[in-house]
Structure formats: C-alpha cells, structure tokens
Amino acid sequence: MMIKGVHIHGMKGAQRSLKRQKKAFAKLGLPGAKEFFHGTINIDTSPFEYTIVKYDFLFRDVKHKSFPRKRIEDFGFIEILELVHNNIRYEKWGYLYVPHKSPHFNTHNMFEMVGPELRYFERNGIFEIKINEGRLKIRNNNGSRL
Image (cartoon, rainbow, N blue to C red; front, top):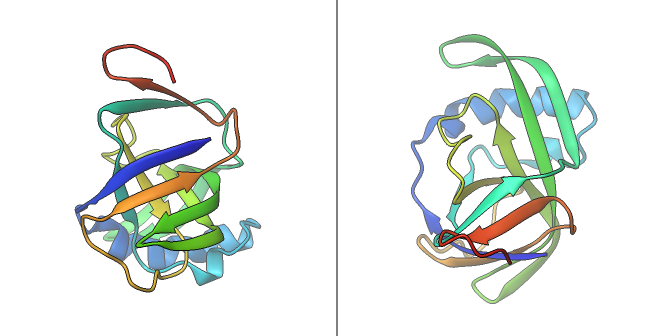
C-alpha cells in the first residue's frame, strides 16, 4: 500500500521525549530503534484519512521518562517498507509512529514517522510511503474508499 503526503510542522514535543523513548523501544525489541533521529516527521495525507487496522509492533504500558515526568503509555509502529523523498528512495527506513497519548492520536489525516536522520530533508516536501497491505484503511474525506 502506498501513501502520499506532505511534511507539516509539528509541536516539537517528540524532540524532547523520543530521545528517552527510543531506549525503551530498543529494550522491547523494536528493530532499528537505537538509530532513530531525535524527532518525528509529520506527514499530512489530506484529503485522505485513515484508520489503523493492524500494527507491526504494539507495546503496551511502556514506562519511559518523558518531559517533565515519568509516563506509562501504549505505542504502535507500522513498518515503512520504502520511503521516497526528494527523489531519494530509502528501503526499510523506519516506522509510522503512533504514541497513544499524543494529541495527534485521533487526527486521521496525519502520520508521525520515526527513523534515522534523512539526508537532503526538505521541509514541506512530498513523501511517498510504502507499507504492508492490511495495516490501514484509507478513504477520501468524502467517504469513498481507496
């Protein structure tokens, strides 16, 4: 399944917390977690909206230090098989990142992505994201399914 979207600016919260969270993800066995950049890339998929059907990794009741206190939270990850940005193709780049206490959790036209730092990152640039079939249901906000 291919998803296309545009980078949008986030709230900068992940820059503080992901640095600490990735240690917990690595201990839980999430492949590549140690190489995560300390921040997320937010992608707007408008006018398309999505519903998560299945995670590749789901960690419940993760204890982590998040600014300014310790938290317990659920995190879901959907593996990105291929990422295309700025005419550069990245194989198995990272994950769609779904922290369940995030203000974005119920925003159905935006994804947060985590992975290694991207070379030649273009703010407000276009991203194409390939994930496994059956992970999301995507529909146009007029109700038609894709």
